[in-house]
Amino acid sequence: MFIAQIVVPGTWVAHPDRDGQFELGVQLTQLENHFFEANAALHYFEEARRTRPAPQIGNWDADMQRRRQIHEHLVQELDRPLTIADARDIDFRSEVLFKQEEWAQGRLPSQFQMEPQFAFARAFIFAVDAFERLLAKLCQPQFPATLPTLHAEISASFPDLRMVRNSAHHVEDRIRGLASENKPLDRKPIAAGGINAPGGGIVVIGSLCDSRYGATMANGEFGEVDVSKISMLYLQRIFQGVLNSFDWIGPPQHLPRR
Image 1: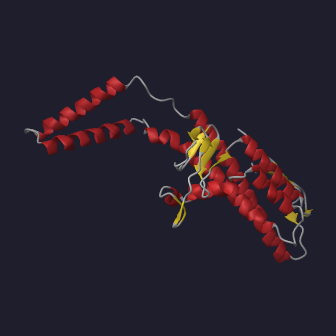
Image 2: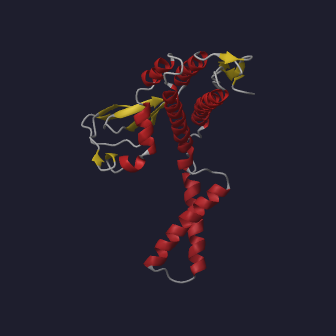
């Protein structure tokens, strides 16, 4: 478990008027929330990768036998010669009942075993993107001159962040081969993320290669964001720098809170 620790230099940010102090405090608190959302998402992403069940093998014969038993029971219940429609219906119902029985016994669907990794990877990307957007709003003349430089470090550390986030959020465009509404996607060659498509022509909706979440971006290129401790360390340095840029009043605080 990696916990990105932060020291807030004081209790209240210094500001010439009370309303301005309150507003700035709210923005910095929200920046803090996005930061720790990213840290929490990283923790659960790594936990999902570590605890993902190994593929279940060796149950094929038992599963087929149980399917046959369910199928035979449904045939006996019908108690008449099967029509083609009956056979199709019983095949379908047999599969449904078999799966429901498995789930009731605690066996998760195979789709559930991989999905948490994708969900927490996207949560990490969304949190970092929200952090970046809010920090961009703080890059104003009345605030410390160091903030634009710190904001630029996000782009340097996460060059594909915005466009990967947009692709993750606008799947409805990507699956239709669009860069945006009514603008066709120019699908570029891919040689990254475990994908080799030198001729281009494919759209990656969302992929995971080790800790890197990747997707085809609006410019047609394949982009990635690393969901890792290294990425969190980049963000930690930036956030600490933002807090250190302001003058503070009162004793320091250690984050995250217990």
